Image 1 (cartoon, rainbow, N blue to C red):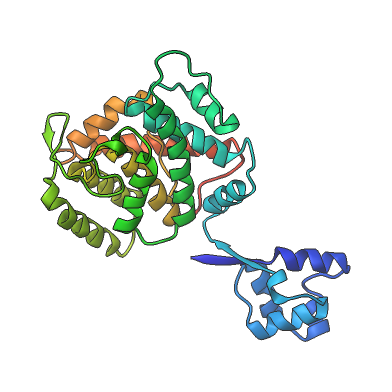
Image 2 (image 1 turned 135 degrees about the vertical axis):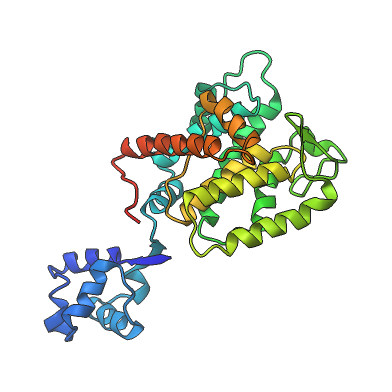
Length: 308
C-alpha cells in the first residue's frame, strides 16, 4: 500500500504565504478535496494540474509516493540519505552482528559496527576473510530487503538474498556449491534430515503458494514460514541468515514490527526450530521476544509500533 506525501506542495505554499485551505477560494476546490492532501490521498491529475499552474511548477514537484508503513519510510529515507546514527544504521549493525554470530562468525559487535561505519576493520589475529565478506554482504542484503519489502515474496527474491550473502566467499569457489540457487547435495542440520535436493524446488513452491494465498498475514504466519523454510533448508549454507532476512522483509511488507534474534538467545531459537512440529510455542515466544528487542530499538528514535 502506498500513500502520497505533499511535501513539495507544503513548501511552495509556504513560500507564497499561502495555506492549503487557501486553495479553496483561489481554485474553487472543495474542502473535501483539500482534506485529501492532509490524509495522503491521491488527487486527480486535473486537480494537481490546477495547483501546479497556480504555483508555476510541474505536478511532479508537489508530491511523491511513499510506503504507507512509517517504519519502512524511515528506513528508506535514512538509507537513501546515508544518514548515520539512525534506526537504519542500528538495524544494519545489530541484525548483521547477531545473525552472523549465531552462525559462527568471530567478529564482535564492535568490529561489525566498525565495518559498517568506516569500511575498515581492526581484525586482530585469526579472523577469517569470509567473516568479513559475509558481514559486508549482509549489509547489502538488508538494503535489498528494504528495497523489495513491498514486493510479493518469490523464489527469485529468496535466491537473490542467498546470492548476495555468499558471493565471493570460499564456498562460492566450490564447484558443487550453488550460490544463489538451491542446494545440489543433501545436508543434515543438528542431526536432523532436511529436504533432499531433488525435492527442494517443489517444496519451496508449495510453501510460497500457501503463504502468499493467506488472506491476512500475521507475525505468527511469518514465524511459521520461517520454521518450514529452515526445515526445508533449501541452500547448501546460509539458510538461517536468508530465513531471518525473509522474515524482516515480510514484517516490513505487512506493517508488522520485525524481530531480531539476539545471539544470546540462540539456544532458545534453535530449540524452537527443532521442536516446531511438536510445540510451536518455543519458537513463537523467542521471535516475539525479538520483536520486543526491535520495539526498544525503535523507541530509541522516538518511533512507536504502527497501530495497524
